[in-house]
Length: 113
Length: 112
Image (spheres, each protein chain N blue to C red):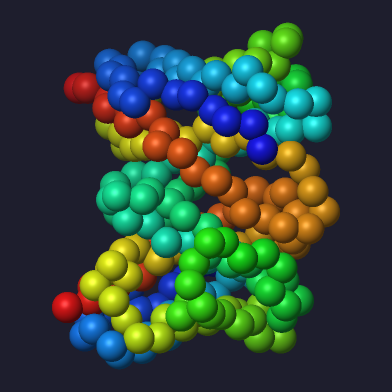
């Protein structure tokens, strides 16, 4: 079974721009969660989508948003990029929402200059 | 979710068992213990989880003390590829909401 895939793997953007990252979960998995990882803050939860609805949201500003499609694929968007948004963005999928083990993708490395 | 305490770093000789401890003294009866690991610059990898009984899978064993206040992840025959940061997470089971809170973990270095 194919794992979680994320595209693109690397991205360089300029301050003020916006960016969209994509995540395809494991086949049959319906929950997708997004995390941000930085050296200073570690792994931080952004939000979770299940059945095309946002179920949980972490403590991030409204510039960070996401959505989920009917095939469970998910996208996250960051608008008005700031230098501090440079991070590894990780997507994780699980069978459904609730406390199920999550399977992570390789991440998208975003650099904001 | 209960807090966990892990040593910041550990070394293990290749081929020996790696025993990674985790303290979760405030754990409550309905909280599970999860272990993940993250190899440099990759996404975290699920290893194992348990509630009160010891668990074993193809990757590792999880030993939870009888009072559930601590646990140990055991990698039976550590290889160089097991060098990673290991996260112990305590999480109550809920039917909705799937966020995991990762702490700073234990950086395990397997030495040849």
